[in-house]
Image (cartoon, rainbow, N blue to C red):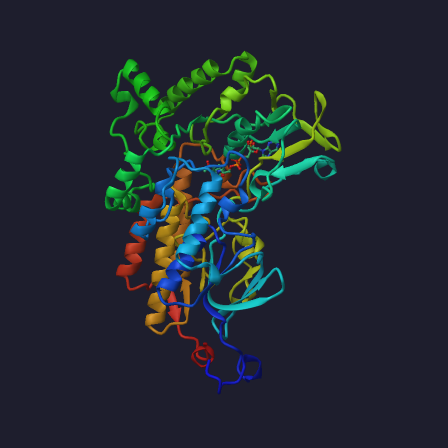
Amino acid sequence: MTPAQPAHHERDTPPGPDVEVLVVGAGITGIYQLYRALEAGLSAQLVEAGGGVGGTWYWNRYPGARFDSESYTYGYLFSEELFDEWEWTEHFAGQPEIERYLNHVVDRFDLRRHMRFGAAVTAALYDEASGSWTVTVADGDDIRARFVVAATGVLSVPYFPDVPGREDFEGESYHTGLWPTEPVDFAGKRVAVIGTGSSGVQLVPVIVPEVASLTVYQRTANWCTPLNNAPITPEEQARLRAEFEAIRDTLNTSAAGFLHEPYDRASTDDPEQERQAYFEKMWNSPGFAKLISHYTDLMVDPAANAEWCEFLAAKVRSMVADTGTAERLIPRDHRFAEKRPPFVQGYYEAFNDPKVTLVDLKETPILRVRPEGIETADGTEEFDVIVWATGFDFGTGALLRMGIRGRDGLALAEHWADGPRTFLGIQATGFPNLFLPGGPHAAAGNNPRYNGDQVDFVTEVIAYARDHGYDTIEAGADAEERWTSMVDRNASKSNFGEISYYFGTNIPGKPRKYLLNSGGRPKLFTEIAKVRDGGFRAFRMARTGDLTETSA
Ligand code: N01
């Protein structure tokens, strides 16, 4: 603005947007979106509810939190210099190192000055006349933005089950997804952990040495397999650097965004003895190799899956000394990968420590939380600390809590009353100029890879609109319908039950709709290419008459 121009409040016309792109969330996706927007020459700001950078990796700082995708496959690939200069210490880095990395990226690319922390979004209202959004943050400030990119993540709203008396507990209470920035002192304390998903099973073995006692409350046993983590040797570091181009190509094109090679044999191709040998190889393989490099029929043939599960059950029995505990730790009600499988370090072995007890909630459900502890059908056990490792309102949780209202005041909560409706997982019809990379209908493997694909495309679409003089971008209703029904249709073809939080089943009253991208990353690539080839006509782009006058 030149000095001769009046200040915004003195104008007759409404002021123009404060910023072209407002990113919500300083997680891995939001940081990347901020970088891309600035690189494209757009003015951009980022608001973040937390006190620092990291998103999931800021909030989930519980002991034991770590990657289960290889560190160098999870980090950014947009800069070879960044890839070269950052040395991950482990194949699967722990939360402190991840948080340091994300802060390094923010400072390395001078992004922090565009970021505002402690700024949770409480409302986002679309203004038809100006084709822009007014976003209210927790301190009451309003930011007007042409485009809003909600990079708020799928696992960002912790879920506390409605257990009677939960608020009455007089000891310390924590949720793994809302972990305090000050370390929690477990020394000599009687600790309860409720929940045995990926978070609970990471935490348990790490705190055992400190606690006086640890009681693990398990409702559903999980198929946990070893993470098989290791330090990255200097030779491996050198190889990673030397092979950057090839690594990036594979990660940018592979179906799930991993380096693991898909296997070309079905379990029925091998005789029993060779199958067992291959199962052993999988057991000793790192992280998600156990899904991606497994027999091709693992996820489609129930018999193949059942045989692998028998192999896993035998492993549990061999690791856990107490027979009753071992049997309780073996899942009976779902197949491998029907729920998101956790990868562990020393989880099963932790139950051999006399300080650790397993309570099977299918046998003795929690009746209530009391001021002094937890009451089950077996009586009350007293605790100093309760850790709720009870998961998240997955997929739609954050977006539906942001007070988003689009065209004609349409609430996103209303538009999604029966589950999310999106085009490519990045836009919803009726919400022009709002983008949702990394939200529902997005996930298809290693998060940063397909979230990054979405961010790249969002940036491309915004730049296209800008370069062609358009102010508004909105997914067409037919495009939204096509993508949404593709997601629902493919999800319903699975021979797995709808028991995972992927279907919203962990939250009472939530619509049972698939929340990931059931078409996978290849489908996202195909559709993006089609949109590009079709001259972006899947989006409605328009000029807003008075915008040119009022834009900053
Ligand atoms: O949450 P979850 P999470 N009474 O929903 C139990 C990612 N992640 O935070 O299965 C008793 O998986 C519930 O029991 P049930 C990863 O994508 C990644 O552990 O519903 N228990 C379950 O055991 C993961 O999938 C890493 O019967 C109750 C647990 O709480 C996702 O985050 C690390 C209950 C919740 O498990 C979520 O994982 C950590 C109740 N009323 C997380 N309600 C990496 O390694 C729920 N539960 C990268």
